[in-house]
Image 1 (cartoon, rainbow, N blue to C red):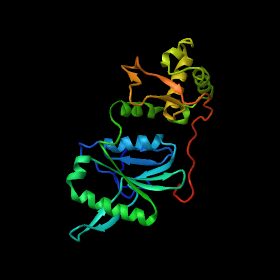
Image 2: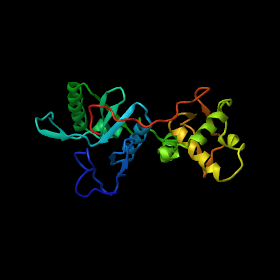
Image 3: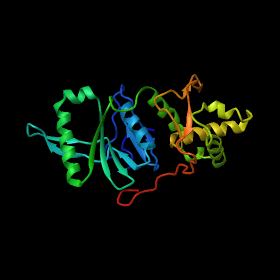
Image 4: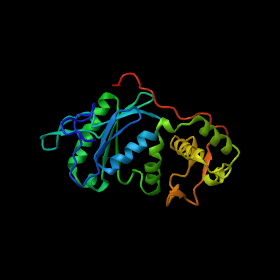
Length: 244
């Protein structure tokens, strides 16, 4: 989906595609359109989607003006604004570590953004390619994100997984699925497992591969974080004091 004239609602600008950067538009947990203009920004989106303390977030939320060290007026738009479930508001910036260290202009705009956030009682956070997910963690996030929708929250299948994992230690997924005949119902069980993993009801080692060559990795293990995981995933509800 492209926005040739206007950015998505709630965005003050549309992201720029230079032909080389990884950019696009996605839908967040509250159904709002969110932009990203790099793979690193998309990684942060995946983290925000999975974080239960994040109730909502928007991209390109606001543009501020500030004076640089030479007294020249500059403009800056943070990458994301985040609303936490406990009421906190944050600005998030995504950048490249080496570029951040080399360019004084980036440090100046960070100082300006921090000053605005401090004045408002907000927080300002910077993420880099050195702090955001990579390797297996990113691959797992990328794969499981496709199953975060409520359409994969089949109550019967979820209860099946919770019942069969309640007496298990860390176990390979196929060892659990071996108790079910291979039929069309098994597909629903796969989808429900991915949904439960995304929301952390069923645990896994995110630093190790889950899927390998179209199947579960031989070393993949899943388990429940507590004996009875009755807290099935719930969609965040809008918080007061912010746009719906």
